[in-house]
Length: 174
Image (tube, rainbow, N blue to C red; front, side):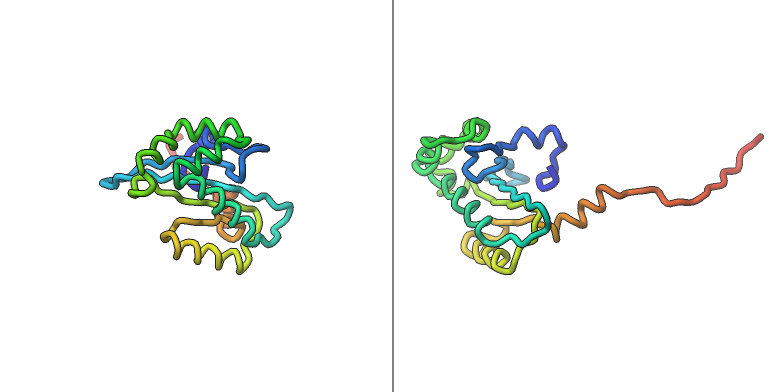
């Protein structure tokens, strides 16, 4: 909801979390903007921690591995041949990903992939290093993480707006 900028009800449409989600908790196809002629498939994974513990590179490597299935038609077909959460399969079909990959959309840049990890934990140094290395290898912004350091101030700002305590004198006729 907050990462894309959708309202609450629209955001649930793209959540595919479940027992057979294969490490993908949400999938969203961003349309191109302006003169751009590509779409971006955004693959989300969330990691909830009981307390703000350290989140290491393992959380990111499973997301990177899951995203690899969306880079070729053969790999996506193999992915779908296994047990897959029904909502995830529905989103893959809704976004016409097999057809896009068959037509070479990823290979020629008409389909891009962006990965997002959302966690209630705090990324450790190794996780941050992996994000940097992955973005260097793929492209800037390919892998983004929203951890407690990044989400905490936003959550406080959204949850705590209060009017200032003050008296206001308003002159009026009797």
